[in-house]
Length: 449
Ligand code: NAP
Ligand code: HSE
View 1 (cartoon, helix red, strand yellow):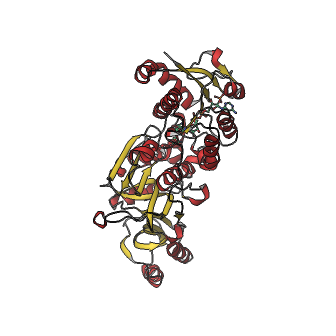
View 2 (view 1 turned 135 degrees about the horizontal axis):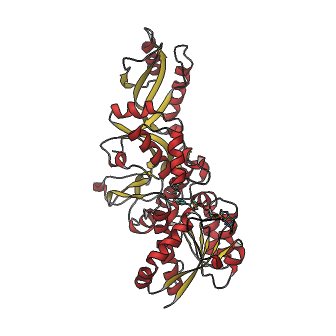
View 3 (view 1 turned 120 degrees about the vertical axis):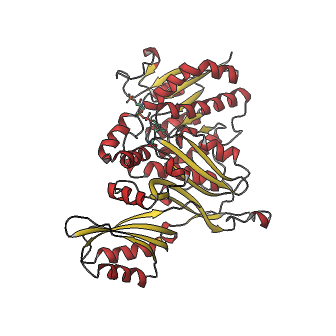
């Protein structure tokens, strides 16, 4: 049987997972594909390091350049992370006409367009199923399965580490720092975990999904990013009392323009692009919505297409095995494309309807949860309500729980639809009141209707 020789660049959490999965299911894959996948070599930074996965020492090297350049290496799998050396690895392989598989969303977010050009110029392909939502095959879904749809809305829990932290804070009352350490130990977190908790990793993934759905490459700076560091136990508990769960969401919403959603009765789509919101922020999600039940390191992506309607993709979003599953799927595609000479059957990215625009979050209208720490004194509500009323922003409910010690009390406001810019201006005015004792906490509410 034909063997396809694979060069693994990176033998950490994901590289080890790929090795284990291939050891377990390599012969099953061979019988399905009609060809074998063989790991020719594994390049790592420190070949002498003791590892959880024991690679045969003769296949381990500290020299990725030689492994990539070796004529025996037919497919290169980049699993080292980062955007500098990883970019060199991918460019070197593509320039040799070798297909590349990567799980590196930071790399794609920063250099995707350049890498796609290199792949095209050298008649080869770049596969990146594992870059978004771990084991969920969402890239294939957007590029192939939903190709006949306009995506009008996509909302996803796409960072396993943050979802793991928020879930344990909610279910166990656990402390942020302790749970982050567990996420690192379990192999969910990035080598630099601030990429996870400050929302950057989710932004890389959301940008990739937005680009595939809307046909223009969304630049990292166009994605509004907020992380989860400011989410406290108090907010998780108040959200629960109000019927919500706090989740870090990646949101891609079509807000208008010529490609905006049209009722089915209006017949043919109008063509053209739409203005989109592309953001990552923690949000209050109604407990009744399926995304509220996605817990621990699981991810889920809800995609609404104008033909198919609502769809949901769920699975483990981080960790060695889940990610390895997606890498194997790409390896199978790459190997079959080599065998069949169909290297560009599904190109990595196709620009379409190229006039799309990312709308700044300041222009987007949302609902809000606001927690204020106020001095417990008559007249305080009137002053806060006055500021909101003058800005034309409505309050849908107020909670001031009884029984708080000291002279400050938490006040929770649920705010009707308002533009983000107006809400930020109002919060600044409220924060400047002498009766406000801590920076206001504002979390958007996503009803996901
Ligand atoms: P990791 O555990 O830190 O492994 C990184 C591997 O790359 C290590 O084996 C390291 O070698 C090697 N490496 C780093 N710099 C190198 C260099 N200059 N030359 C040769 N090898 C080098 O990272 P990971 O969690 O497996 O993540 C790898 C990639 O997958 C990242 O892009 C990440 O974002 C992505 N990803 C991760 C997950 C996940 O759940 N962990 C899920 C989806 C995608 P040493 O072992 O010698 O240090
Ligand atoms: N650090 C990432 C996460 C790995 O927690 O989701 C999967 O991309």
